[in-house]
Image 1 (cartoon, one colour):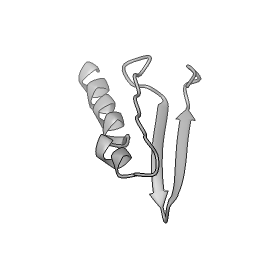
Image 2 (cartoon, rainbow, N blue to C red):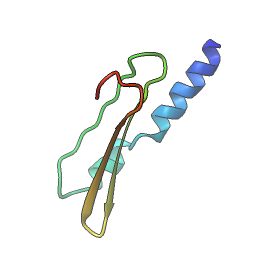
Image 3 (tube, rainbow, N blue to C red):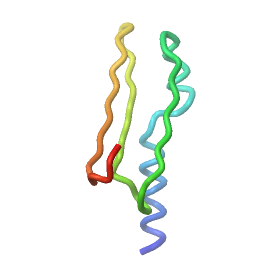
Image 4 (tube, rainbow, N blue to C red):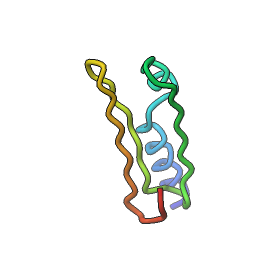
Length: 66
């Protein structure tokens, strides 16, 4: 089971924005960090920039607090 949790943790980390994606939004100075409370966390964040409009998404599905 430990190996499956490690795989899920890696998958979750891959779904988060990369530093280069954050740096590409030149209108803002952005940084992001997520540390799971357990092996795999329920928090998620993403940033999108389309036509100069920046959209921020933050989610907490395990109720540990954002």
